[in-house]
Amino acid sequence: MASAHVNVGVGKETKHAIVIPTDKDGIARLSLTNNDGVVDSHYLCEACGNFVAINPVLKYGDSLGINVPFVLC
Image (cartoon, rainbow, N blue to C red; front, top):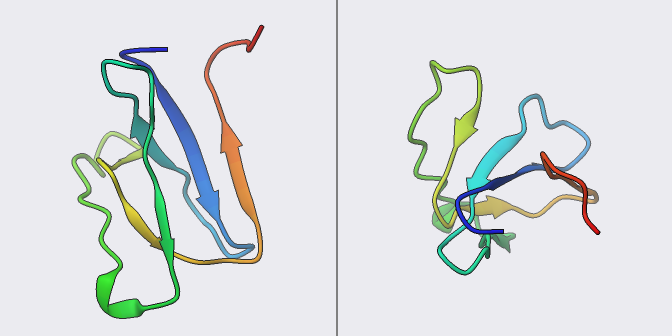
């Protein structure tokens, strides 16, 4: 779904979900890594209560949670 977002949490220690917006084709991109040197989340807004990131590279974790703000049909 274009112009939407998904909420992503990586690892059991996740305190805040990261909001990843979808592109014009409805795709939200996320990369996972074990290399701390390449972790990059490009936060756009932390004050709004969410952590918004464009094409984030996040530290790999044992779990991955993804929530969407709409019903998948």
